[in-house]
Image (tube, rainbow, N blue to C red; front, side, top):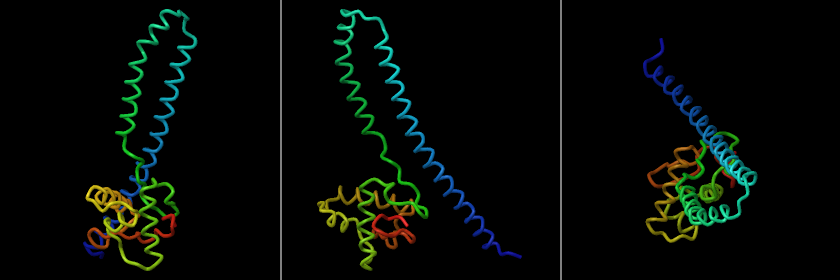
Length: 181
């Protein structure tokens, strides 16, 4: 007869696997959604332009419409650039065997490279303050906290490990300068 603790461990393992599968699925769906949104916006713009080209030509009305649209267009461009700035950056995918660090943004790749170098030299974990200094950044709280946020995100997604609070190293299985396997 299996023990209660053994049964709980089995169920926990099953739940953990399911969570990882769902996270991977969510990452895949999020990436597909971003591609579909870009494609949809391109089609909307194309349809609008075709409508302008095929519409009736009335030079005086066209000139007046252009003059009215110019300030609105500038505001639209500002709003568009502001909305682009407010969008979250590319998500950090959950690490899995065979996944290369090239899927990450440059900031995350830089963190992985620094920790991979330390791993190769058989040096211990690295703090975010040490990372900031090694990257040539001022070790001011804003820079250090930005690195800490990125490192914590990499820990949550399985790329890094945090053996002691505030000290980061490559997770088991993640190796090489690219961070992939």
